[in-house]
Image (tube, rainbow, N blue to C red; front, top):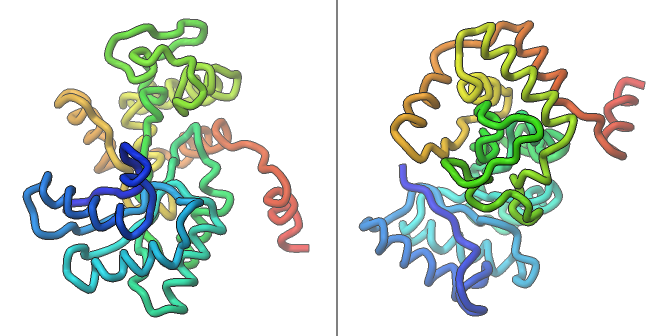
Length: 260
């Protein structure tokens, strides 16, 4: 399956989700990939400067023309995803069939709104950064900021908060508590930390399949060891408990009082 995204680019007229950029971007993707169609074309992030109607009408035309088979979204809020679904339904445009959210043991906020929307509307879920840039591979240790080497965080210095998986964004007690539990479960099961983290994610109720970010055959071989087995329920419960966090308002209130 061939899948790619549209949204970002260099220059004011070569980014965003306006008709001009979408049409230019899709044909450039086809050229680079050496194909006449894409199986999945995804909105990379919400565009606050372009009317949603223009974006969705253009994407619908690509499906009608046979250039794109299916449509998906990534990096949107719950209300934005639901608005997109509702507008496609109202206008009779091609619907989105998948969401690519940030979702892993350290980042579970997608559970608050995005995953319920996907569950209710029947969307597939293909999480990005399932190992959070290396955080869930067991290679980092408390108080030992990486510098260079074979990690995204080390290569970038890890201090820029806009680099979302940066060291400063995750160097906290919650992260190290999750990693301590992950390493313990990995030791108990005889699996690598990455395999345990991927297996946990793969078997979350709404998840279709995580997107692997392996940069070498060795990493790919290790990642593929996450399939074909199930975590013991007690180990899964340990990971759930370590990685969960108290939801903010209104999510916690709605959950606490749902049966009242």
